[in-house]
Length: 363
Image (cartoon, rainbow, N blue to C red):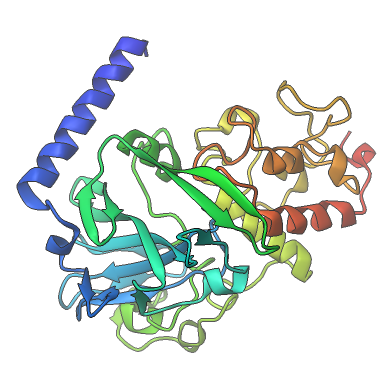
């Protein structure tokens, strides 16, 4: 596709999205999912908050996730996949705690994963709210930018300059990036052949919230009958029960979850990075397919970084090096972050360093 055609496609997408917002939803509140109430940002009565058990890192931003289902409709679970009813609305609001000087604060990982039902606006700053709505034509993305307590539609993407106080009390200034609709598609289209957007993180692998037992109807595969009685393993719904851990080792389980939620939307056999020929999906059982001992595509990498994952040698693994990079042309993920996820880097470093295999086994 030529550059001119790509520009035309982007222009048409922007015009279509602009028209949709202008005609239907000029403000976030018009979706009737979230609202401002008594110095708090919270949900309406028809909307439920959910959380994930593994972080999709976004420059230490806290995330307030909600789901609104059409009246008297549920998500169907057949033991393999979730099926959403037309009209399902997902929202994700990115926000930070702030200090007295107005600097944003990087909270520890456990606090970033904590499920909250409202955001105190006297202690936090809202940055953006992203929406996905399931229509007969598939999932459609919308975005709203916050300025104090006023939101406006965001079409072309934005950059917001922030100074963040890290957990070690050091400060760092960076540009927080809000993607345009084209960049939303880059991450949310996991299968380039189908070219259809999908929610990220909303899957049995990563869900961790009590709402699920109320929102999901289990489909009995033997009779194909729908029943409103929820099976016990769905009711329990903790960090690893709806999709039981397939890795006995806690470190490997955590590392594979992290790589899956942060990287597998591009790095899968049908994704936009399929040419790299690795799959970082949680259920990929072949470590060679994950990148173990594979030679990376040529990049400006340190001389000793000659494998995507070098077992036992994290310092020689391209995967770790790119997670640590802040160079736009080299860092991974390419979108969604400007800062280094130090907890994530530490996790992957420990996992790779502990892999006790020889690359000769793959030749």
